[in-house]
Image (cartoon, rainbow, N blue to C red; front, side, top):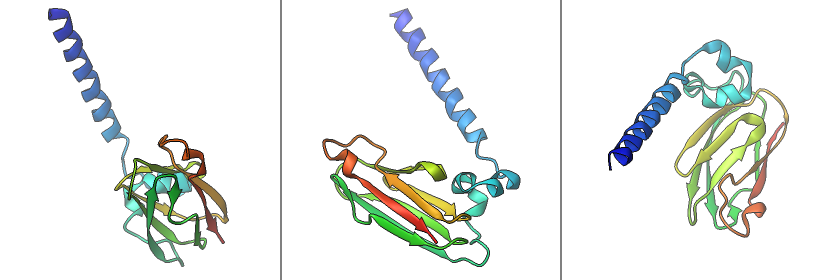
Length: 141
C-alpha cells in the first residue's frame, strides 16, 4: 500500500514538473516568433497583430468521421490565419507539419504566412479506418 502511494506521489510530482516546464516554454521572444512560420504559429505575440500588407483570416475547420469540411484553404503571403478545429463527430486533430501546427478540438492556431507554397494537413488523431483519408492542403500564393 505504501509503495502504491509513493509511486502515485512521484507520478504526480513528475506531472507537475512537466506542466511547469511547459509553461516556461511560452515566452514572448520576438526573435523566435519572427524566425519561422512554425514559431509564429505558437507565439502569442503574433496572434494580435496581422502580418504586414496581409489580412487576418479566421477559418473554422470542421471534422467529422473521416473528412474535413474543407480540403483546400487558400491564402496569400503576408496573411495571418487563425484556424480553429471543431469536431462535429468523432475525435480528431489537425496537423500542418511544415508549419509546426497541431491542434485538437476547440483549439486555434495563429499562423503568419511568410512563404508561398503548398502545405499538406491531416488528422493527427488516429480516428478509425478512414483516418488516412482526412487530408487537405493550405495553398499560400
